[in-house]
Image 1 (tube, rainbow, N blue to C red):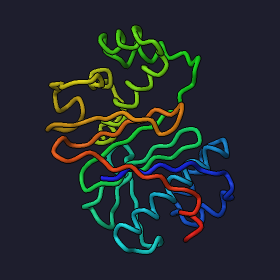
Image 2 (image 1 turned 135 degrees about the vertical axis):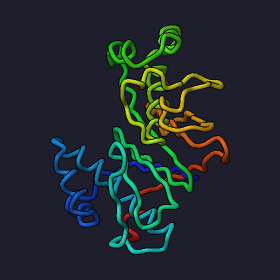
Image 3 (image 1 turned 30 degrees about the vertical axis):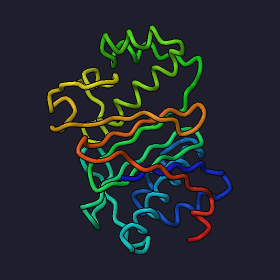
Length: 222
């Protein structure tokens, strides 16, 4: 399992990125109202396609991605490979593995009014964890990214069970229907950069991921 981070430099034109995407991906990118959101999505998909192409030794044009359960992208060329992607602010995060994996990345916004989200999506113990934290904003994003990473790994998605998805440190016993999968899972938190909270979720039967940083040369090499 590997987790790649990339800080998009905003130096590549959107049209140049779109040339590497499928028609469906282009249409999805254009549905974002703000151009920076279009760029984030396009960067993420281009990185994903190039990484997958390197992993399986196939050209970019042959990479086929479709949407599976809850719109989670699926790699149709080689079902043995799993991946997940997240982007926020200036950073893109991609995880690739031979087992189910989920990642979530959030740019921390100091002063963000998250109380409504906490009351609806966090358990009582999670709410207490946030309330008692010295930095309540960071605590909120830590809990949120852990929940998101886990339901993205299993393709469960955010639904009425989200409040029951565990996120505190330690061992939890959870109904498989709550997270969309049985078995043991691990969720690890980490910082992508200052002000960027992230989490990765994966089966407890494997070793933790290796972390890598990509830069703009990843695109210029072709």
